[in-house]
Image (tube, rainbow, N blue to C red; front, side):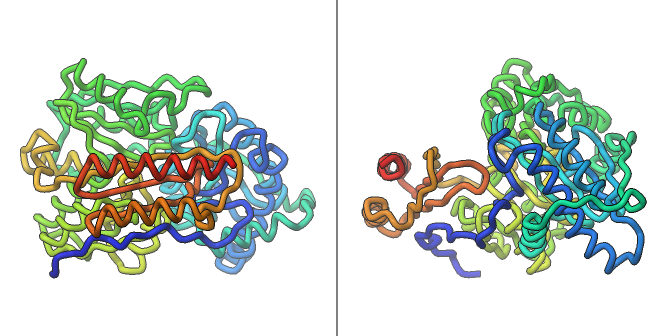
Length: 469
């Protein structure tokens, strides 16, 4: 395999125009459109009608059924009730599971042969945001065409079906136990976590109860933090977006390793006993290296435009094919399916092992990394991934107060062109609008750390000035 060239200097392209759906469902500030109870009611009805058409074609006259899970945000109660009412009015039965990791909703939807699953969560966002994301009956995120069909139904009047056709709702009491056993099944039966002392930061989120149980039942001594949700503290200075909290606990407790999940438990950041943090690129490398050495890796690996170039270079040395998708785990998943590969992910900590689950799962990803360490007898993740040295990469988020087309701004174009000139082919610049928050993300990567940081700050300043004109 030839030596890879540095990725082209590129800005993420705009996505297909949709009115409500972003890259990860529908998300926003609670109380502001579209995250309101009346919209959730209409969305439940619209989704029920759109899903019912496909269900009827595949299953005849049987009633479609939809599962609803949520994270620990206080607004989840309100949105859950509204969605339940809309779905029932459309003729769908509803199963409620309460707080559940996003990948748990995907698993249960697939395992129970349901028409769809809904997760109420804003993932890593603050508590006063919330969101609604959908899973297909196969446990994967909906494709663009299905989301557009739901949006089309939203434009139609909400009219309840006659009483004889209304759906029913019930609690699925054993949901947590089912998902815990599924997570454990992805860890080799001949291995154990006995003797391992780990810190698990649950981000006061959806895995606050399930996460510690999984690792304890596999034998680990678990020090759980971020496991006291009150509806308002999700992701607050904890979890995968604030791994310093987990790192401090690892050092204070003398733990062997640390794991940090985000609010809906589909992201993972890890930490060694010495406090060294490992992002999604490094964890993806650990999983792929283990599978490659054992001869279990099927095909290649998919990253994104944000993936560190050092990872692509290392895979080339291993003769492992590597491709980049657009930013967003849904696009990583689409490319994996297209190529019939299994492993991929983002440096934010969204990791995919399609031989284990149909979607990204922080708990299952952690188990794959821990299994690799247990198989080799290596205790430190830093030792296991020593061949991978990431290139300096700086990401600066510029918050927006209004809609802003940064691609059309001449000052931004000018500062980016100047930065690309200074990098002189030994780095890259990426500007993209976040699909989940009102942000423009400025990323600069290269071999010279000081230059990379200076350029990222310079570009971010110009973007901020342009956005506030």
